[in-house]
Amino acid sequence: MKLTHILVALLLTITSLSSQQEKKNSGDDVSVIWASFLSDLAAEDKEAFKKASGETIRCYDCMENTPSEVQYINLLRENDSLWHSKIYKDLIYIPIDSFVANDYDILFNPTFINILQENETIFSSEETNGVTYAHILVTTTLPTAFFDGAQHIFSFVKNEDDVWKLNEIDTIP
Image 1: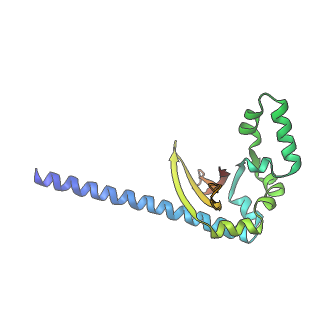
Image 2: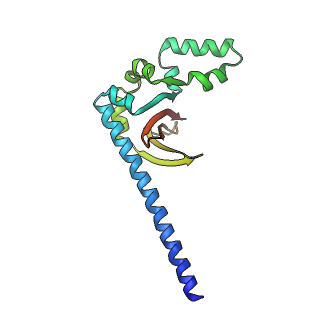
Image 3: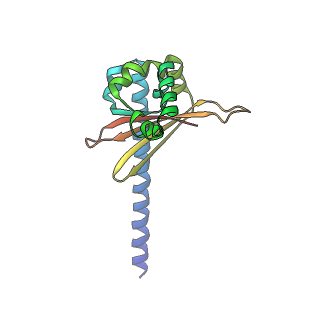
């Protein structure tokens, strides 16, 4: 009986250590993804960016980063009862070629890249329905007495070939 308890305790310890190591490796994996991503941005390597991205990038800000885009979204909101659905089920997904041609230089300017390199970064990963995601949160606007601050979120998904691909850029709030 005593031997059984010892074996169970040993098994639980080994399982716990294995789980902790797996989580640590997953975190290390996310930090490697981020370091590579930042390196590509700093080098202004759009081809590497495309290669590291999915076919589309979910990006709300990309829909309203020029005056003509803002005007289009405002007209959509005013004139289409299904505007919310159109935005969040269709327009928010920017094809990678369109993103590189129209949004990359606006979003990834030198000032923003510096913020991404220098500011607080939080790494997390999760698995949902057999799909592994990595999320990198960067404080991009520091809090003040009148504003809670803001973060950008860069989400990557591990594809069927075990390769991480950028699939979302978002903000909080």
